[in-house]
Length: 505
Image (tube, rainbow, N blue to C red; front, side, top):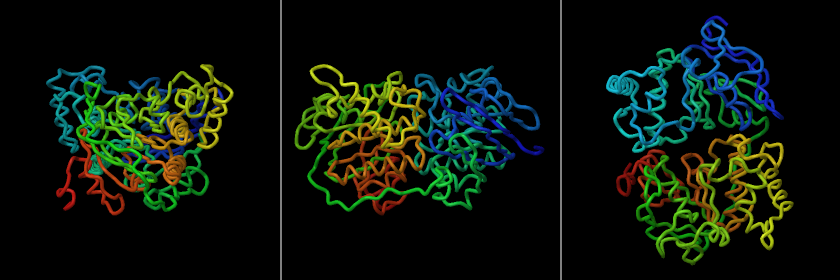
């Protein structure tokens, strides 16, 4: 093990009914960018939690820089030189950048001294950040910089990054990659988790592949195609979504100058949004997180009501109707936040199927719930979308993020909507599951539904969308055909450039 930064040998962790990791072994070299790949439920999260001290392994051991490494908590991991940037940020909106960074430090210096350190590190690594700015006013990309700089102030030997580019524009991804390459050149090792396989190929030196909790192989990403890596992850050939040719039909969903105020203090109000989506059409909407995506979905779902004439479904004005009435009319939605918004954490999958499917799946009669039928509906979702769970009685919070995502999207798809609006439909799911979800959306469109896909995954939008637009600060760009758009044009649209500025990019 001499010369290795971190050596992992035989790590095993079991929970009731499932072995999350089974005898996992691999090494991370100094100055190496090492990818950790696997399907949802493959054991990636449990493994990095053991490395970071959040979970104690049942057996196996780790050696960090030649010494036995057994972190009992994250503070011990950080003290040993291991830092982690989580997929979901842990920041307080009402505090400024420096105050948020201080909260993660055992003995923070004076705020003025810390602000100076933040400025120095941000300039050194090409991550511009104002230490005095309120976090609630930052873009998603800037929030990620706060998390990264908080880690860099610890001078880590190993930096763990979980899905770091899911909230970034293409231009911000390039900035992040430049930062990571600088860290690598300085000798910092990076353990990188992502479902974006082309990013893995561009950035990583080696990849360890997990499947069902076990290590099943390694590869050199730059010498391995994205399709080959996906097949190593799932253990079978990966099928890309296919779509039959369709001719767009009548307008099913129309927004006419939709303007609504965000209910959240740090939300983004919608400003004069107009669009039309026809039967058989998939409209892709891009945007960095926090530019009005949540508010748009809420306005379409009926969680935020609109003035008369602003929201029209199949020719009928629905701006004043709530979620139940809209679902009954055929407008279904799936929000980004799956645990708490799309699903009730402590309720079973059967109960969660009932929450949105009661009306359209006839799961109630004369005020009584039809539990047998609700259970059958949940079981059908689990089977069709390959939701890895012991059964429909399992609580939503017990599922991995990717498996809950498959259940939430499947629940809406299987209710045969006339219009379906989804925000981040494949957030945190593996390549195989993403292909299944995208295929289901395309099949709905072929059947005559109008689909709106709000996503930060540009590859996803280019794969499924007929037409494309971007949200920026609550405004919608010009809607353009998706085919032929370059990443530079898309990045400019997401950044707020419109019209001629984009056309001549």
